[in-house]
Length: 231
Image (cartoon, rainbow, N blue to C red; front, side, top):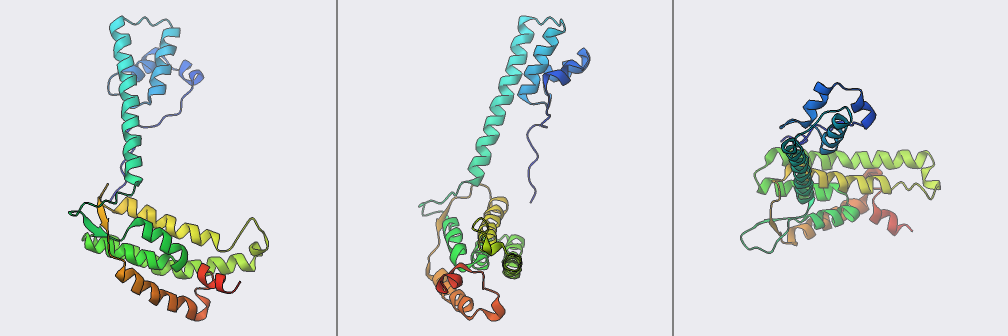
């Protein structure tokens, strides 16, 4: 799986920089198929005009069309990216059943990132994306000691004494955030799905609660539920 390249090469320009370019260099900005941003094309057009370049009405229309097409393409890309991040849950009976993104987010806050990572890996298995399933499952396992040592570091270095920093906050937010990124990047784009039954998540939650409250070697000391019961 790869991340798609930007639709345009984003080149930061300003009028003063463009004024230093030769006319032939500026002409590249207003040619069809150029890879500059619409703002850069507009500025190059204006700088060429300042340098005495006379444009015919046909050329002006062509350049404005280039600028408008680029703006529309950027808007389309922006909307597509927004759609990619949306949760496409549906009630359509023909849609595949998966554990919902809302379930993964809410459960990770109370039962930990491993719990949600395990459910997400089951989603990938159902979609026959086995490499993604293994990656997500291993991430969930690794996150348990990561959360423990992060919490321990913050506690030992006095961050718990400041109201601005709380040892639970970093792993509590980071874990679910990474899971959502994994979902967006590794799931089929804009896949519509139905929410899977809660029976297995409830059974798994009970098992996870037992592990949390046993708290073997303090691995789950930073978990919200365990800390809440000690208040």
